[in-house]
Length: 297
Length: 262
Image (cartoon, rainbow over all chains, first blue to last red; front, side):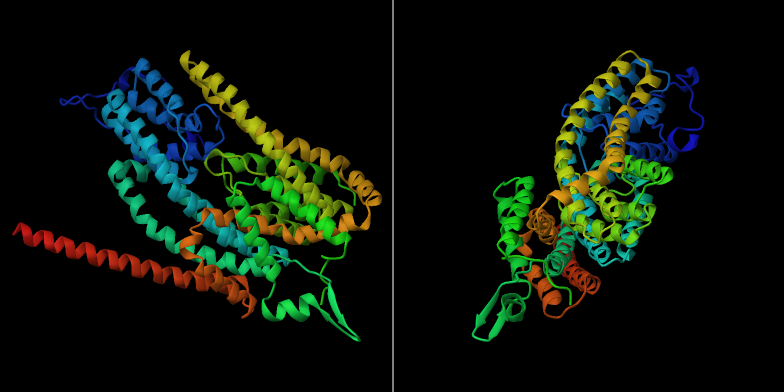
């Protein structure tokens, strides 16, 4: 494990590890693939755990890059101190699994320019964390939640754990990729990351189509609203739900409820109030026999 | 049912780990159904875990707390609901779910408190960094993990210790419309997850596919897996059409550019 979160040959401000300055004022890059992987591993311990309203996830970046920065600045204690404080103070917040790409690209700048590269690194981080998260939130959080989460949830409601296992398996693949994302970011550099974010928008659209198809089906199948109301004409009684509505528009109430809730959220009504409202409405409607538990067939 | 010491410890640790994992390692982020299933397995009733977990999972969709916003903690809700449903030993999961949902809402406040606590942790970390005390600095980061673990573990211990009596008392005192109403609500509440999710998605651009999904499920009676596969097919074709078109235009303009150069 010592090799996983900390470089094997790490030495404390060793005199022999002075940074090598090149004639053009830049420095000989010091980081290896292994150093960057250690950043990815350390980021895995952190992700968004240090989130505060002050500098958001910046401390996580500092924790992840600690040994990389130590290697970059070698025995130059003051420069290292400036660098680590800069990491702590430079506001950062991005979708955790993709933030390594951006932070790796930033480290590439610092590895070459040292303190002179720090301003550009900060600009890169602050400038791209928004766009990168826009893509990352959709591809990493929202779509897996829609597709894998709803398959897992829906199958689980029927007592079947296969969907859950599928989700765990897919996320394991993402995890393997995450364990080296700093390497990719470092090698790609700022330009490639920017252009990548543009290309991914088509992929995001395509994936949204998939997500909306699944949500459309789940609004029908995962929401249960049943009314025991019946019409009585003399001797004949007709159930409003199974006799009328389901014949024309199956589970119409679920569609209406989804449309109404969507509208309320869009209007800025807090989710907690909507949940409370649903529970209160259910109490009232159950008390007056308007809603009920569907009889199991 | 009675909880033995081993079950008690395992569930408290699982709950603490889940709360921590959600923010830090993210090995199983938002996989509430998984956590409920595991809770059910520990308590010897995997099926209740699956049913509660599935319901909570569908409710939670879209509530991911993106960009540092605070979202209800559905993972905690699911585990509390599973424990209560298993403890009371009835098929009726509604009381468990109702308590769980209440817990999820309370946890929004705890989330805000955690982020304020983190401001103090940040001061500690930075203080050590300024003084060049790097080993102390690195250790201080884990103060955040500690809070999260306790935030998950302590309330769960209370639920395990007193949950059954509390729920039994509620069940005995409450009229029929109260519990039936909660069961009805449990069937409707997943709608909040879907609606929240839709607000993150380009509904105005692609609402037609909502209709496609509804028709496949409601009239053709397909289950969610085949519908997802059809969705994949549509997505692949969309991606192919868009990118091939894009490449063709790009190639054409590149050719044009080359001609001009010559």
